[in-house]
Figure 1 (spheres, rainbow, N blue to C red):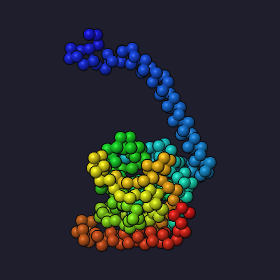
Figure 2 (figure 1 turned 45 degrees about the vertical axis):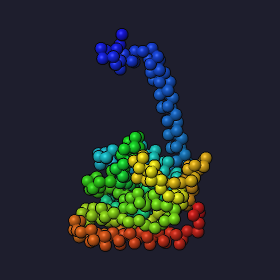
Figure 3 (figure 1 turned 45 degrees about the horizontal axis):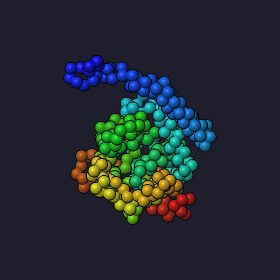
Figure 4 (figure 1 turned 120 degrees about the vertical axis):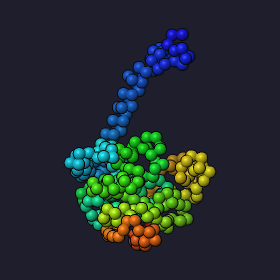
Length: 322
Protein backbone atom coordinates (compact mmCIF):
# COMPACT_ATOMS: atom_id res chain seq x y z
CA UNK A 1 0.00 0.00 0.00
CA UNK A 2 1.26 3.46 -0.89
CA UNK A 3 2.78 5.40 2.01
CA UNK A 4 2.90 2.37 4.31
CA UNK A 5 6.30 0.87 4.98
CA UNK A 6 6.86 -2.83 5.15
CA UNK A 7 6.32 -2.75 8.95
CA UNK A 8 2.65 -1.80 8.38
CA UNK A 9 3.02 1.52 10.29
CA UNK A 10 2.42 4.67 8.21
CA UNK A 11 5.27 7.17 8.40
CA UNK A 12 4.74 10.86 9.22
CA UNK A 13 5.46 12.08 5.71
CA UNK A 14 2.83 9.74 4.28
CA UNK A 15 0.25 10.88 6.82
CA UNK A 16 0.87 14.53 5.99
CA UNK A 17 0.22 13.75 2.32
CA UNK A 18 -3.27 12.41 3.16
CA UNK A 19 -5.82 14.84 1.64
CA UNK A 20 -7.83 15.27 4.85
CA UNK A 21 -4.80 15.88 7.04
CA UNK A 22 -3.36 18.23 4.44
CA UNK A 23 -6.56 20.31 4.51
CA UNK A 24 -6.56 20.36 8.30
CA UNK A 25 -2.91 21.45 8.33
CA UNK A 26 -3.63 24.24 5.85
CA UNK A 27 -6.69 25.33 7.86
CA UNK A 28 -4.62 25.50 11.05
CA UNK A 29 -1.76 27.37 9.39
CA UNK A 30 -3.91 29.86 7.47
CA UNK A 31 -6.81 30.40 9.85
CA UNK A 32 -6.56 29.01 13.41
CA UNK A 33 -2.99 30.00 14.27
CA UNK A 34 -3.26 33.56 12.86
CA UNK A 35 -6.58 34.02 14.72
CA UNK A 36 -5.02 32.78 17.95
CA UNK A 37 -2.03 35.07 17.48
CA UNK A 38 -4.30 38.07 16.87
CA UNK A 39 -6.45 37.18 19.91
CA UNK A 40 -3.32 36.88 22.08
CA UNK A 41 -1.99 40.17 20.77
CA UNK A 42 -5.30 41.94 21.40
CA UNK A 43 -5.54 40.47 24.90
CA UNK A 44 -1.98 41.53 25.65
CA UNK A 45 -2.57 45.08 24.42
CA UNK A 46 -5.77 45.20 26.49
CA UNK A 47 -3.94 44.17 29.64
CA UNK A 48 -1.13 46.65 29.00
CA UNK A 49 -3.58 49.50 28.33
CA UNK A 50 -5.57 48.67 31.48
CA UNK A 51 -2.36 48.48 33.48
CA UNK A 52 -1.21 51.94 32.42
CA UNK A 53 -4.69 53.44 32.95
CA UNK A 54 -4.91 52.05 36.49
CA UNK A 55 -1.27 52.28 37.57
CA UNK A 56 -0.15 55.29 35.56
CA UNK A 57 2.98 55.89 33.53
CA UNK A 58 5.07 54.92 36.55
CA UNK A 59 4.42 51.28 35.62
CA UNK A 60 6.26 51.57 32.31
CA UNK A 61 9.09 53.53 33.97
CA UNK A 62 9.57 50.74 36.49
CA UNK A 63 9.55 48.10 33.76
CA UNK A 64 12.28 50.01 31.96
CA UNK A 65 14.40 50.05 35.14
CA UNK A 66 14.07 46.27 35.41
CA UNK A 67 14.86 45.74 31.73
CA UNK A 68 17.96 47.94 31.99
CA UNK A 69 19.20 45.99 35.03
CA UNK A 70 19.05 42.62 33.30
CA UNK A 71 20.56 44.03 30.12
CA UNK A 72 23.53 45.25 32.18
CA UNK A 73 23.82 41.73 33.64
CA UNK A 74 23.87 40.22 30.14
CA UNK A 75 20.60 38.40 30.67
CA UNK A 76 19.35 36.03 33.33
CA UNK A 77 20.93 32.56 33.62
CA UNK A 78 17.67 31.01 34.82
CA UNK A 79 15.54 32.12 31.87
CA UNK A 80 13.76 35.21 33.15
CA UNK A 81 12.10 36.82 30.12
CA UNK A 82 11.48 40.58 30.60
CA UNK A 83 8.57 40.64 28.13
CA UNK A 84 6.77 37.75 29.85
CA UNK A 85 7.56 39.30 33.21
CA UNK A 86 6.07 42.62 32.05
CA UNK A 87 2.76 40.98 31.14
CA UNK A 88 2.69 38.99 34.38
CA UNK A 89 3.59 42.03 36.48
CA UNK A 90 0.80 43.98 34.80
CA UNK A 91 -1.81 41.36 35.69
CA UNK A 92 -0.47 40.82 39.21
CA UNK A 93 -0.23 44.56 39.83
CA UNK A 94 -3.91 44.95 39.00
CA UNK A 95 -4.73 42.26 41.57
CA UNK A 96 -2.42 44.01 44.05
CA UNK A 97 -3.85 47.52 43.61
CA UNK A 98 -7.48 46.87 42.59
CA UNK A 99 -8.72 43.41 43.60
CA UNK A 100 -6.94 42.90 46.93
CA UNK A 101 -6.23 46.63 47.62
CA UNK A 102 -2.93 45.60 49.20
CA UNK A 103 -1.61 47.76 52.01
CA UNK A 104 2.17 47.67 52.41
CA UNK A 105 4.10 48.51 55.58
CA UNK A 106 7.89 48.70 55.84
CA UNK A 107 8.93 48.13 52.22
CA UNK A 108 11.79 50.54 52.90
CA UNK A 109 13.25 47.93 55.31
CA UNK A 110 14.32 45.75 52.38
CA UNK A 111 18.04 46.45 51.76
CA UNK A 112 19.58 46.68 48.29
CA UNK A 113 21.46 43.70 46.91
CA UNK A 114 21.11 40.11 47.99
CA UNK A 115 18.40 39.42 50.53
CA UNK A 116 16.11 36.61 51.69
CA UNK A 117 12.47 37.52 52.21
CA UNK A 118 11.07 34.94 54.65
CA UNK A 119 7.28 34.93 54.85
CA UNK A 120 4.33 32.99 56.19
CA UNK A 121 2.50 30.94 53.56
CA UNK A 122 -1.27 30.67 53.27
CA UNK A 123 -4.32 30.76 51.03
CA UNK A 124 -4.38 27.31 49.27
CA UNK A 125 -3.12 28.94 46.05
CA UNK A 126 0.22 30.83 46.16
CA UNK A 127 -1.30 34.24 45.49
CA UNK A 128 0.55 35.53 48.56
CA UNK A 129 3.83 35.13 46.71
CA UNK A 130 2.51 37.09 43.73
CA UNK A 131 1.30 39.94 45.92
CA UNK A 132 4.65 40.13 47.72
CA UNK A 133 6.31 40.22 44.31
CA UNK A 134 4.02 43.00 43.11
CA UNK A 135 4.81 44.98 46.25
CA UNK A 136 8.52 44.82 45.59
CA UNK A 137 7.91 45.94 42.02
CA UNK A 138 5.38 48.72 42.78
CA UNK A 139 6.50 49.89 46.22
CA UNK A 140 10.22 49.06 46.27
CA UNK A 141 12.90 51.62 45.41
CA UNK A 142 14.26 50.66 42.97
CA UNK A 143 11.67 48.21 41.66
CA UNK A 144 12.80 44.60 41.94
CA UNK A 145 11.77 41.13 40.83
CA UNK A 146 11.57 38.51 43.52
CA UNK A 147 12.84 35.04 42.76
CA UNK A 148 10.59 32.49 44.43
CA UNK A 149 11.77 29.01 45.25
CA UNK A 150 9.13 26.64 43.90
CA UNK A 151 8.58 23.04 44.89
CA UNK A 152 10.17 20.36 42.70
CA UNK A 153 6.78 18.86 41.79
CA UNK A 154 5.75 22.14 40.14
CA UNK A 155 8.35 21.45 37.46
CA UNK A 156 6.30 18.41 36.43
CA UNK A 157 3.24 20.51 35.53
CA UNK A 158 3.03 21.04 31.76
CA UNK A 159 3.15 24.69 30.64
CA UNK A 160 3.34 25.87 34.27
CA UNK A 161 7.00 24.90 34.43
CA UNK A 162 7.77 26.92 31.29
CA UNK A 163 5.78 29.91 32.55
CA UNK A 164 7.50 29.87 35.94
CA UNK A 165 10.92 29.74 34.28
CA UNK A 166 10.03 32.71 32.06
CA UNK A 167 9.03 34.61 35.19
CA UNK A 168 12.37 33.87 36.81
CA UNK A 169 11.11 31.37 39.38
CA UNK A 170 13.46 28.48 40.10
CA UNK A 171 13.41 25.12 41.83
CA UNK A 172 14.22 25.56 45.50
CA UNK A 173 17.56 23.76 45.74
CA UNK A 174 20.62 25.26 47.49
CA UNK A 175 22.77 25.59 44.38
CA UNK A 176 20.13 27.72 42.63
CA UNK A 177 19.79 29.95 45.70
CA UNK A 178 23.55 30.46 46.00
CA UNK A 179 23.82 31.44 42.35
CA UNK A 180 20.96 33.95 42.61
CA UNK A 181 22.41 35.53 45.73
CA UNK A 182 25.79 35.86 44.02
CA UNK A 183 23.95 37.88 41.38
CA UNK A 184 22.53 40.18 44.06
CA UNK A 185 18.97 38.91 43.69
CA UNK A 186 16.08 38.91 46.12
CA UNK A 187 14.76 35.46 47.04
CA UNK A 188 11.36 34.77 48.54
CA UNK A 189 11.24 31.79 50.89
CA UNK A 190 8.24 30.13 52.50
CA UNK A 191 9.87 27.90 55.13
CA UNK A 192 6.52 26.33 56.06
CA UNK A 193 6.23 24.87 52.54
CA UNK A 194 2.96 23.11 51.73
CA UNK A 195 2.24 22.77 55.46
CA UNK A 196 1.50 26.47 55.56
CA UNK A 197 -0.44 26.99 52.38
CA UNK A 198 -2.69 23.95 52.77
CA UNK A 199 -3.66 24.13 56.41
CA UNK A 200 -7.39 24.14 57.23
CA UNK A 201 -9.26 27.35 58.02
CA UNK A 202 -9.40 26.44 61.71
CA UNK A 203 -5.58 26.87 61.87
CA UNK A 204 -5.42 30.23 60.03
CA UNK A 205 -2.55 32.52 61.06
CA UNK A 206 -0.95 29.73 63.11
CA UNK A 207 2.58 29.27 61.79
CA UNK A 208 3.58 25.69 61.00
CA UNK A 209 7.04 24.23 61.54
CA UNK A 210 9.82 26.01 59.63
CA UNK A 211 12.48 24.24 57.63
CA UNK A 212 16.09 25.07 58.49
CA UNK A 213 17.59 25.36 55.01
CA UNK A 214 17.06 29.10 54.60
CA UNK A 215 19.02 29.81 57.79
CA UNK A 216 21.99 27.68 56.71
CA UNK A 217 21.96 29.49 53.37
CA UNK A 218 21.77 32.95 54.99
CA UNK A 219 24.76 32.19 57.23
CA UNK A 220 26.80 30.58 54.45
CA UNK A 221 26.27 33.51 52.07
CA UNK A 222 26.15 36.29 54.71
CA UNK A 223 22.73 37.35 53.46
CA UNK A 224 20.30 39.44 55.52
CA UNK A 225 16.85 38.03 56.25
CA UNK A 226 13.79 40.27 56.08
CA UNK A 227 10.79 38.76 57.90
CA UNK A 228 7.49 39.27 56.06
CA UNK A 229 3.94 38.80 57.34
CA UNK A 230 0.96 38.40 55.01
CA UNK A 231 -2.48 39.08 56.48
CA UNK A 232 -5.57 38.58 54.34
CA UNK A 233 -4.65 35.49 52.34
CA UNK A 234 -5.97 32.96 54.85
CA UNK A 235 -9.58 33.94 54.10
CA UNK A 236 -9.43 34.06 50.28
CA UNK A 237 -10.28 30.34 50.08
CA UNK A 238 -11.83 28.58 53.07
CA UNK A 239 -10.31 25.11 53.32
CA UNK A 240 -12.26 22.56 55.37
CA UNK A 241 -9.62 19.83 55.12
CA UNK A 242 -7.57 17.77 52.69
CA UNK A 243 -8.78 14.98 50.41
CA UNK A 244 -5.84 12.65 50.99
CA UNK A 245 -6.97 9.92 48.58
CA UNK A 246 -7.21 12.40 45.71
CA UNK A 247 -3.82 13.87 46.60
CA UNK A 248 -2.17 10.44 46.50
CA UNK A 249 -3.93 9.51 43.25
CA UNK A 250 -2.83 12.69 41.48
CA UNK A 251 0.64 12.87 42.99
CA UNK A 252 -0.05 16.30 44.42
CA UNK A 253 1.12 17.10 47.96
CA UNK A 254 -2.40 18.15 49.03
CA UNK A 255 -5.96 18.28 47.71
CA UNK A 256 -7.81 20.92 49.73
CA UNK A 257 -11.58 20.74 50.25
CA UNK A 258 -12.82 24.21 49.30
CA UNK A 259 -16.64 24.44 48.99
CA UNK A 260 -16.63 27.72 47.04
CA UNK A 261 -14.89 26.01 44.11
CA UNK A 262 -18.10 24.02 43.52
CA UNK A 263 -20.32 27.12 43.38
CA UNK A 264 -20.65 28.60 39.85
CA UNK A 265 -18.81 31.89 39.61
CA UNK A 266 -17.00 31.44 42.93
CA UNK A 267 -13.73 30.01 41.64
CA UNK A 268 -11.96 33.33 42.06
CA UNK A 269 -10.49 34.04 45.51
CA UNK A 270 -12.64 36.15 47.78
CA UNK A 271 -11.67 39.86 47.54
CA UNK A 272 -10.10 40.04 50.97
CA UNK A 273 -7.83 42.97 51.77
CA UNK A 274 -4.15 42.06 51.83
CA UNK A 275 -1.85 43.63 54.38
CA UNK A 276 1.91 43.09 54.10
CA UNK A 277 4.41 43.86 56.85
CA UNK A 278 8.16 43.93 56.12
CA UNK A 279 10.24 43.76 59.31
CA UNK A 280 13.73 45.01 60.05
CA UNK A 281 16.56 43.02 58.43
CA UNK A 282 18.01 40.25 60.61
CA UNK A 283 21.60 39.01 60.32
CA UNK A 284 22.96 35.72 61.63
CA UNK A 285 26.46 34.34 61.92
CA UNK A 286 28.04 31.02 62.82
CA UNK A 287 28.77 27.74 61.09
CA UNK A 288 26.18 26.87 58.42
CA UNK A 289 26.88 23.19 59.12
CA UNK A 290 26.02 23.42 62.80
CA UNK A 291 23.67 20.85 64.32
CA UNK A 292 19.95 21.25 63.78
CA UNK A 293 19.47 22.24 67.42
CA UNK A 294 21.69 25.30 66.89
CA UNK A 295 19.87 26.25 63.69
CA UNK A 296 16.49 25.78 65.32
CA UNK A 297 17.29 28.48 67.88
CA UNK A 298 18.08 31.00 65.12
CA UNK A 299 15.05 29.97 63.05
CA UNK A 300 12.89 30.36 66.14
CA UNK A 301 13.81 34.06 66.29
CA UNK A 302 12.71 34.60 62.69
CA UNK A 303 9.53 32.61 63.23
CA UNK A 304 8.60 34.59 66.32
CA UNK A 305 9.27 37.89 64.53
CA UNK A 306 6.93 36.89 61.70
CA UNK A 307 4.27 35.77 64.18
CA UNK A 308 4.53 39.15 65.95
CA UNK A 309 4.05 40.96 62.62
CA UNK A 310 1.03 38.76 61.86
CA UNK A 311 -0.48 39.50 65.26
CA UNK A 312 0.06 43.23 64.66
CA UNK A 313 -1.72 42.99 61.33
CA UNK A 314 -4.65 41.11 62.85
CA UNK A 315 -4.98 43.69 65.62
CA UNK A 316 -4.86 46.63 63.23
CA UNK A 317 -7.28 45.45 60.55
CA UNK A 318 -10.89 46.57 61.02
CA UNK A 319 -12.24 43.82 58.74
CA UNK A 320 -11.24 40.93 56.52
CA UNK A 321 -12.50 42.82 53.46
CA UNK A 322 -11.49 46.44 54.14
